[in-house]
Length: 485
Image (tube, one colour):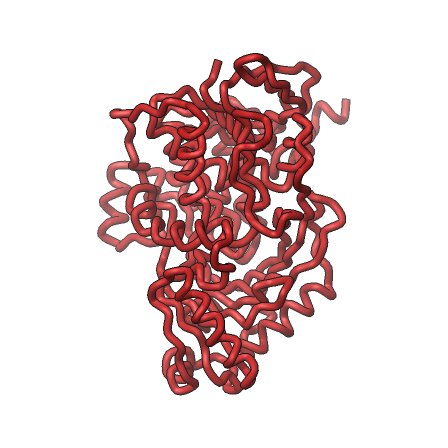
């Protein structure tokens, strides 16, 4: 019997798991894919928003500003990658200048600090690559960039360190309310057998599928409508074109196409906002990427399209209610944390704190866990080391002297570190999200065989069981000699 079962190990579910680990509870965290942070969390802008744009009094406004203020401390504890570089919301017309004044006033109502309206002279001096037609901008000094999947991984690793049980490739297929607990039925991917989990409380943080999970208990007061955004990622020599996150005045359907340096120094442009035909539909389309490019060039005209490394799409869990859903449902003990679209990444830490309070109000006793350790060991990233630091490290651990990914300068030592941590890994994408091996110019064309060899040698996973991204993405079918027999 678990005290709490959390469904969904995206950034929101992982943040809740870590926050609940601060108390003496038996917790399980369920994820249907082969890794954490593998849905919306891995495919978004990676922006820690300022919180100025959300409607005052909304659930979004309540959590986005509060979440933003938590990031510096979380970065100091978890070492996932966060820089508070600030943002600019550009105005290109007199009407848009009036709009950013309204948004500034909205930010004041949301108690957001670090807001300032700046003129074109400021923009020319501080962002010389912006479109010269920009008349003014709203500067938000507290906005920043992070690595969203590394944030989710760090939260989950720290939760596990503090006693949370993570179950991967574990899909929830049914939930039943018993007299004093819930019976959660799950199945392991690709296997016919089912498992049953008992828990006093269930937290639904299933992202795009949170409405489907809620319906397992007959809860039908919201639906999730997937909204897709498509992006272009550029090489690192384009990352210095802007110093801050560059927004455009938002529309009713989107915060607009942004141009931003990523935490790791690439340039990212996007997203658009279109309805996705299915929740897991992630195809990109030429017309969408053309739109993203044209809109981004309105802000920053001179990025080079030949420097595009890859394109990708991510789906947001847009709720029918128009706002985040963070509440105990009509079924006592079942808490919905649903419809967490943008700025959900920013809001996640504050949402986690609120979920603990909801559980306390629902009657659960939360006793402090005196053994809680907030720290998570950082990766030793050789690309960021001085020659002296690297030489000293290689003397102690020679694997850090063997570079596996040339594009991102990732060593065998970093890959082995990822494999030895608390979350089991058997896919190339899981390694990529932790070490950046395969994220560079060649998009893993060079390093794939070596990474597979390292995984095979360091774990019990055979070469033909290693996948690109979990179930249905095998890289090898078997030995050639056997296939020819």
